[in-house]
Amino acid sequence: MTTVYQRSSGLVQRRAVSSSQGAEGGADDRDEKLGNEDEEAEDHDSKETRLTLMEEVLLLGLKDREGYTSFWNDCISSGLRGCILIELTLRGRIELEKGGMRRRSLNNRKVLCKSDQPTGDVLLDEALKHMKETQPPENVQSWVEYLSGETWNPLKLRYQLRNVRERLAKNLVEKGVCTTEKQNFLLFDMTTHPLTDNGVKQKLIKKVQDAVLSRWTNDPHRMDRRTLALIYLAHTSDVLENAFAPLSDDDYEVAMKRVRELLDLDFDVESMKEGANELMWAVFAAMTK
Image (cartoon, rainbow, N blue to C red; front, top):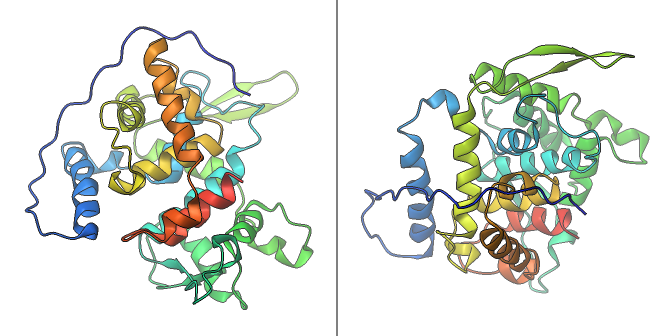
């Protein structure tokens, strides 16, 4: 499936972050605390380096020096559309319709617009506009196909988000993570985005590594939601290996075993647990089927 890279020894452990939140009780509060720990750590950095889920997945896929994703990666396009759906639901803009008494499966439930308030992100707002205007509503799998342009229905091609990778790469340039260059490939010139701030990418890689090693909880509902989504979407985008490549052999085996445990979960069951974001689990189900 993916080439196993030569890995250097050891994993640099992430520093511990103490949360300033008080114990307020309840499953939702517990999830909030897990999310707040990561937010507090990020507050020490410039807000210019705060990345969206789409930008994080693309950054994991970009070659540091060359500045482009692998020519053989045909998964990242749909993976980035899955990131857009999860980013919108984490920001409270969309949700999954109720399951009803018979608890329909995640794949059969429609995506509903919860709020049409702009997010400030052009890609997210473009996708949100399509979802708001579409009647009747569509399910998660359909939206991934429509936003990717991978549909046989010519009437739905207008929903395609174009030049997503290039637009996200420009966001990374604006945030000081990458730069823009032109490279000649004999028959054509291509715009590339080599890495300029290696610290941002290394911090991202450590976050993924720590989530399945030093901070592994053995319960996805106790994990930070963004980090959990990053692991799933990086896997479906075929870029997760890039985060695990520097690990020692032993840590690599443990990390892959735990990722497999996440992939083997029953997503319908997980979505029914207290405090779960149903649309997020619906995206996982659609992207990993």
